[in-house]
Length: 447
Ligand SMILES: Cc1ncc(COP(=O)(O)O)c(C=O)c1O
Ligand SMILES: Nc1c(O)cccc1C(=O)C[C@H](N)C(=O)O
Image 1: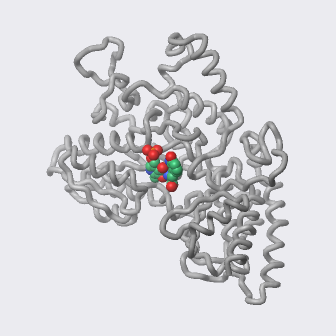
Image 2 (image 1 turned 90 degrees about the vertical axis):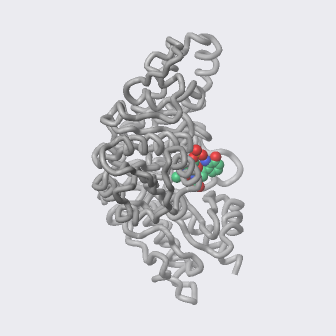
Image 3 (image 1 turned 90 degrees about the horizontal axis):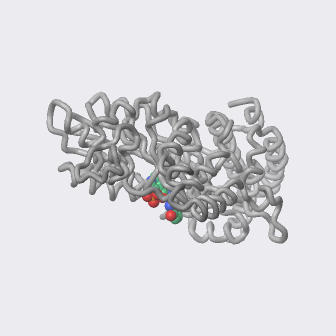
């Protein structure tokens, strides 16, 4: 923890799922005073925040080039783990792509404006955020589609190796549903059985019949970070491949794909990478696996010579092999403009602030007089935490509805989870303080 946040952020006084010291003293007066004291701390932490200038690069109610919006008090936006806020550079760039590149240059833009090579170029822009060297990430399609490509390709690679037949795919039992659905189909396509396994048990469960495992780096519901290096190494030890879903980690914490020898990875760009609704996803294939990457969706964009229009399929070399059909250029170039906010931002600094924000939010929640109604699901050890705080709460859906009505936007996940994403490029300590304060008011009003 750096000087910037270190001394200011105390360890939260809550224990994971166990109640703990919630600061509720029954009388409420002392707790209320303690809670009020946290407002000053939030302001101090904001002043010392090395990333605080980044907020002005986003369109938010109280930030961005246009300044504060008149009228309504600014919304506290803690849902960047579902849809990232709009980077201020995007509207102008999209307008230019539409008016000039499409409007004036028309078909020439495929070459003259770099449209054709955008999937690899933007992949190379995302790669450093994933800890990947250039040439291994390609942007396109949705995460769901990339899960299919990655899992089928991983199984095909595993099955082509020497040794016993591999007929089993493991999937994280707590996964976001789309991965489970697609993995089941990928397993069927490759003659495998699919087995759902708790993520922390995948390392010990994988065996000589395992072809591949699909695991989430960070759990979408609880915000728990799983052991990417250890699980990957354990899969390799039995000859299986590791496929990671990075939707909830890319842009929020270091991933270290190359360092940890991950085989394939996928992720979306509309959360912490702020690419916009439905922005294209990405696929990482480790360089040495490129020659063996056999896509289940070998569209013409992945052909070695697409404009030969040959009847025979011959895959391109490199990350291009992960492409399918014509890229969604408007979304893709909006994403490219959105990625400019990362210029000069080390992912380590983002991680530090993310942990400081979630610690501080947990501390504020613990200090709420009514905080006993909330059970943190997000692990307290930093090594196990992603970039959100998930709180179990009775009537969570109604509580989140009231929070949103009062200007604090998080989200609800079934059955009883309040989710608050912290996105260090634009979330402030005052934001999370205010969110806890309003949460306290909502809980008080419901008592
Ligand atoms: C872990 C994870 N995987 C996949 C997805 C979604 O995939 P897609 O972009 O294909 O809808 C999400 C969120 O929507 C997610 O949280
Ligand atoms: N992709 C989404 C969408 O199109 C609509 C609403 C929400 C989403 C999400 O991204 C959900 C998100 N993956 C989650 O963690 O719950």
